[in-house]
Length: 223
Ligand SMILES: [Zn+2]
Image 1 (cartoon, rainbow, N blue to C red):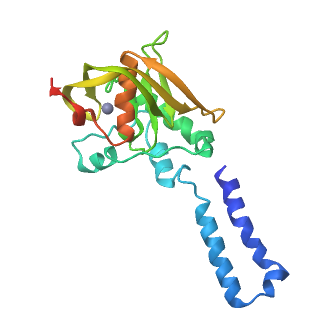
Image 2 (image 1 turned 180 degrees about the vertical axis):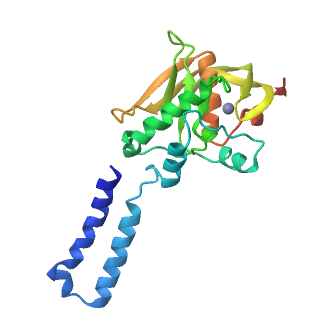
Image 3 (image 1 turned 90 degrees about the vertical axis):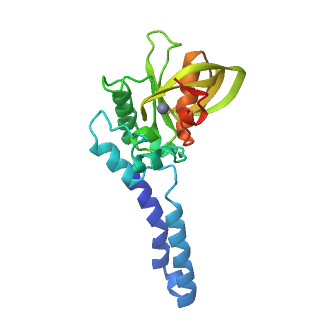
């Protein structure tokens, strides 16, 4: 995928080898070359994978290190606004590797969580893994490019903790009836779904992570 795209990016430079361009002035050729340079840099969609992300995902074992607020560098990542995935990034096997490793991490005995978000494993992308307590068998599922698109009813208090905030618990008000939208990685289509109850609370906690927000920012009281 990446290689094909790099080829498309560089293809335009061949135009300069044509007789047409050899007749142009030096100055025009320089201006045009600068233009191609700009076009080439625009080929890198911000939603595509970056090499640093690839290295981080590929170098880690299936259970990834979970970032915590106790480390200053980790905290910076946890406070970073996340980016969407491009359609190309979702089709890259690296997406499946990240999704698989996030699932292995949140379900690992040492974490034993009900949800995890990209920044918690060092990836500033809109991706969460959530345990669907509202579905048969309570499976964990992964959602790329996720957003909450509707909040209904009154907020209700509930007890929350976070893998990135070790040793603490707090009471947070959350909606019990929401809509989520996300991208289906296979087709690249966006879809919307209504979620209720405790699973809706998990989605709100995890999607907050993608905005750099932690539950301790919203906590009514420490428990
Ligand atoms: Zn959390």
